[in-house]
Image (cartoon, rainbow, N blue to C red; front, side, top):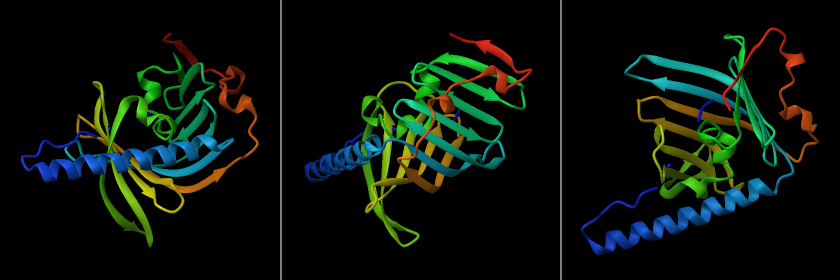
Amino acid sequence: MKKTFAISLLIAITALVQAQVQDKKANAIMKEVTDLTRSYKSIQIAFDHLMENKTAGINETFSGTLLMQGDRYRVDVGSQRILSDGQTLWTYNKDAGEVQIHDAGDAMDAMVPSKLLTTYSDEFRAKLIREDKEGGRKIWIIDLNPTSTKSFHKVRLHIDQVRKQVTSLSIHEKNGTTFTYRIKDFKTNLNLDPATFVFNKKDYPGADIIDMR
């Protein structure tokens, strides 16, 4: 499923100092956002998902939902469902009639938006791009750049300054494709059954199961 902050090298020492201060602020913001996100017992997010590649002429929009509870999560978008109980990752593709099984924590798992909301500091550097307004709300725009080789070069976050919540998240792939998630609804501390995050083959009759572990 769908899936980064370096300080610019500046000649003027004053500009370099300012960039470093910006990064410190970005890290402080991200820490506050991720700490708050982790504090919720559970999260339910409704979002619009846009996949765009101008060169390839791709512009597709889907609606989706994300459920999170600790290390568990479930993403439904388009014809895909991604499930993880914290140990195993199942990716079900309805159109293909198959489910692929991976170990949770692999490269594919790291691209899921739920992980980017809670574990940015493990694999990314943050940089504050600017402050702005969005729908009458003050927001921070922060870029995350990966500290190791990835298929993408940047993740851009829009964060509500008052609620300390991400309002949109864009993953910029090196091949020119951008995956954007615009959050429409954000609910917390719901009572969710742990079975919600586990693949049960009885619920997917006829699906071809491919174990990639």
